[in-house]
Length: 424
Image (cartoon, rainbow, N blue to C red; front, top):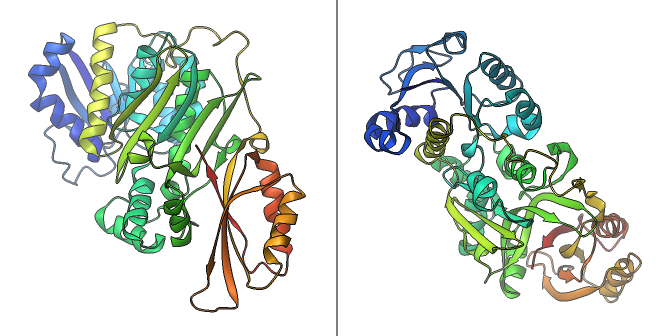
């Protein structure tokens, strides 16, 4: 029998308890052992959690309990969970966590401290999609050329509604909050930070690269409006919030999380509403695509229990991140964000007069940027202004950022230009 203690019995924790109890027969058949939740830790023991296991507010009732074999950490946050997981490992207890923020900052330290004590973290990325297992096991014979994912259901829901119903960001965000898809403070989701944390975890498994959120390019969807949607539709794109890990020729890896225009015919562009989707390209298998719910109590709990079953089956685990020595010889380093090269879309609000486009083009040309596609929309409220919508040929991130700075200085520009990257 494997005895489990759960620290944090919220939506996911309660689902873990219920699934372990209600599906105990199938879980035992697949693992070879009964997996039994025997204790839960919560801040307020007077609140009904809908579970029939003993609850305590003292974390040591789990960490110091010799009967408990595995600690499931579902607290949220970074610093306190790090202390909790370290103590669990020190006491010889296996750990399963769904905490992406913890792993975004401390995954390498935890791997070092764990040694041969298993740490499962399938639930930390993309909810019920078994992407960790796919990278660690199913694709382990492949050099991973790229990972491209939609890994935040809140962003995807908002952008899907904006694309399909021509509504503005603020209205859809409010609706998402009312439906429970977005938090009261949605910054972590719509700002791209949640997706970036997940990207860092996948990049560690795929490339062995050690980076923190502060090291990579992260942007949210707050500035996208109906004019951007109009351009996307006109030129056959969907707008998605993407996480991208891409291997470069010079042993660099680019990591970024931001909104992007994606050709509508690509599979990743068809992932809508609150669903998640991840495309992985391996050098031998080619492209594989993973689709499913990225959040929710039962979906995330399913991934947690999959880790428990693996712990029962394996006894000893392979290294947490799935490699026993540096990947691909000398390993990879992080590409500086300024050196990223891609195509770009820009929205520039200008005074509607002769010569404006020439001035815009001249400024862009001074940074080696050329225009590919172009649309102009008159301002319906004030005909003295117009909005220029255009895409560029491939250029460097540093050049486009410098160009935006220079465009903003021009008297003909009435707002800071908005840029979205294009991923063909």
